[in-house]
Amino acid sequence: MRFGKPSFEILKIFFMKKSAILLIVLFTTMLQAQEIKQIKGLDNLEKRLLKAEKRIHIDTLERILQLQNELFPNQSLQERKSNFSEFYLAIGNELIAKLIEELDPLKNHFSIITL
Image (cartoon, rainbow, N blue to C red; front, side, top):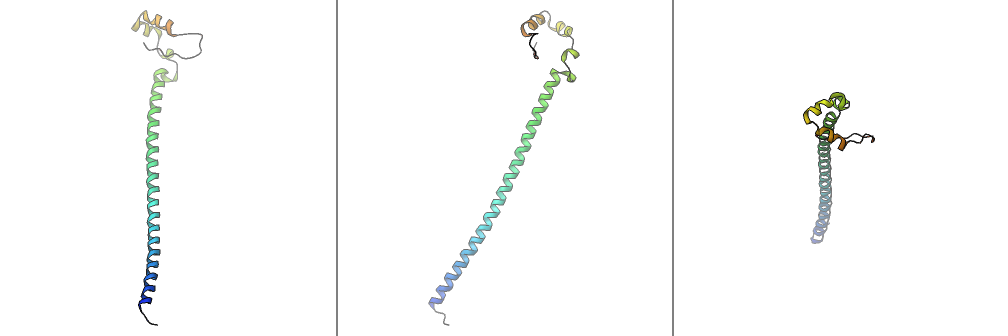
């Protein structure tokens, strides 16, 4: 067998094909690694967002509980804790007018009156 110009052309084509296959495999591996990296990054971002959302919900819940304690001291009605006379001494006759204006005793609901 003689190595001439045609033999080298065949070898060139052979090695070019092998190089192309090697590049495809290498590129595919790089793409898979990048995909895994992106998925991990998205997972971390999702965890951070969930953590922030939980923190927001905890803050909201704490505020709701604070308001509930203000409106219902010790989980009971305010009139069980505070006396009418306390408000009357602080505000005077305006309290009666405000109560008549704001309250409807026939409605079955709570009213919040700011004084």
